[in-house]
Length: 359
Image (tube, one colour):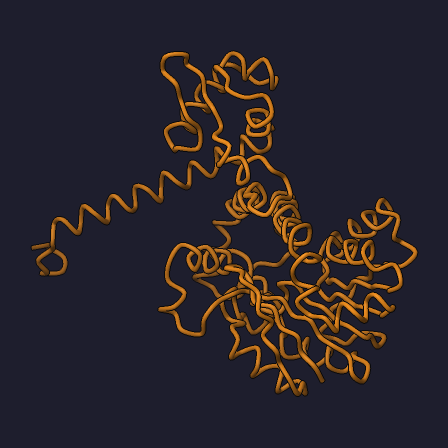
């Protein structure tokens, strides 16, 4: 019986949960060390050049041997690397390489790991807004967050946008092939639009984002990819209205973050030409909390507290949060905005839902 609650505890359950917390805490430090290995290229070295001793890794990668030895030991303890005591060599199993070493691949976690490092720097401020209310503005998030997000989302655009998502919407694909005008609202650093522009040379594209540093990077990307003649990027808050009309408008993981999601959807509806199509990608989640329980839901809700919800609240917004734009909410808000039809596009994706929405 505990002194504080007067409740008799099941000791086995106590110990089992302590083990769970131990695993989660260990996993947090493993994520930090995985981010170190990612930044220094250690996983990529192991993937390409094979098993190493600590001195060999230090020499190959140009890092300090003592740190290499401790890092290798930690990664082996976490099960990220295999260790052979007979040879003192460490190996990255080939099955682990997609998550740890294959940049822009469909399973790569280097971006999320870097994002988490970026979030850690804002912990004290999150504690403050827990007490005071309000939120944290986008401008306070550093390079690790933004660079990590670009690397994370680039995996989607490299592996899913053209091979899976666009073909799942045949009318969208036909229009882009013939020649259409497409606006991406909340375009970030422009990866999606540059991929689309490369694949559909008959169409023209414009990206809008409220965060000026992302727009500046997007312009550089378009220039380097040779598509700046058909892709432009502008600083604008989509909820305040879009300056032109378009055949297709897209948002990729944007609405749940928005300060004013209702205003954003109304702006998108007004900016669509008659017969236009709004393509909305957002988080795969349920309106029922019990259906979001588990590791993926915990990841989504953690990102929500640390970024998605709080940046919306910082602007006095609705604060939908990462799991707040589930399918019933999509249908509700799109109906309010004046859309007549919402089609949930059939894709098998644990992270996202895809919607084809018509005026």
